[in-house]
Length: 575
Image (tube, rainbow, N blue to C red):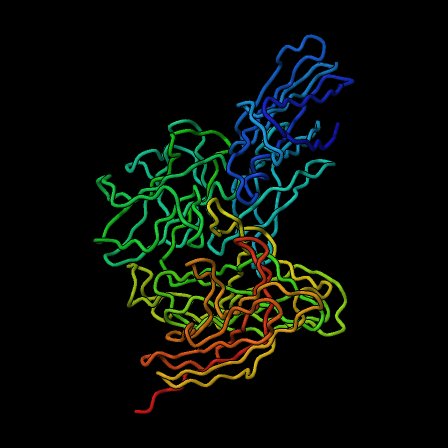
């Protein structure tokens, strides 16, 4: 020790043993990652549930064992005397699968699981209490986050004597962070007072612990209450309620939806409206009434403002010299946000240029960025940042909102000239039955590779002007590599079966399938797409789109090649 062990529970009744020795007595820790790795594999319908056991090397007797700590993954720590020992790794049901890989970090160092508070305010220095195994009592560290940090999460290594801790996630917020006070706040009568626009760092410190926080609101106030716990590695599975002054529940939430795609065990009450003037209580507890030191959370109470989230489909964009490729971005609009969003990208490899489109306002939710690689671009790859910018009010005018004493100071809303939102990369996954879904991942990578099946996608025009009720035909020519004669399909939408994963066309604009030639079989290289504007299509000016040429990899996944940007305009109808 220390060592990182990599292995596989590859078949039924597979049990792996690893021998280790300690020259002197002391603590040891074993951190297993298995379910958290395997759970991301495409179309894997059986899932590992690992268990670790430490045994005496001579007698085989059990000294310690661990099963579920980080979801199904175990974490084991114990004090051992000097001697030889065995680490046993298996599935708890004695099942196996060739794809059930695991990684175990084994060492004698302290292991950090959480910090409290679990969030810091941008631009402020914050003292953090460290939580984990093998730590000295009351271990404190400090963190200083720049005010211009745009990330929601910061992964940090904190100093610990002459060591540095393992990485730990810390949430970033623009709200002032307050730490839960000592003392009883288990009932509405003993609730800790907080103000709207506060981030409360709390802790469900023992079983059956309930945290209550009281706030004042006036009739018509629209509020947003969010608890972040599991997303930051907390053991807490939160459930939140809003109570009135009599303790009667008005609304509650257990699990929230992220990006309209995935369910999180964290909780969110979005755009709740206060029914009357008075005091209300936010109640936080574990859904199973568990509690311990590592049940930390961040409670954010703020006004429900219009905002948006962005996702990328997918997590990788592949180019070849002289070709183009598209990145699709989808907006999830909240609380009536209906503005146009300009798309941006940073960090492209040398030789790659970007044509950044936009997500039109109103009902539109999709946009795209078209990348072009120079003809002499060298093979390269880089991780990029895609983000949206828009001008939107940063504060809610007092006339539309709320509060009693603060109304005078909120009479003139401040306006942020540029609101920036980072896009969340999504990896496509193959679902049972042939469906397509997504898994959130940290990075989107743009790569330049060797020339492949298609060398180019060319259009007869790159500027389409439509009047409401009118159609325009765009001829398409693909340049095949020598010997490539597989089927190619043309499209303006990114879709699979009946699901549309990206549709950057302006509202009211569609493809006339009957008047189009989108399947190019064998050695065919020429097709066409007919674009139609509905009679009631609203005006749109030069919306950036592209024609894709898709080559199937399997039933779900495809290699997608793109044309240069295709600008589509819907003209204002004559009065």
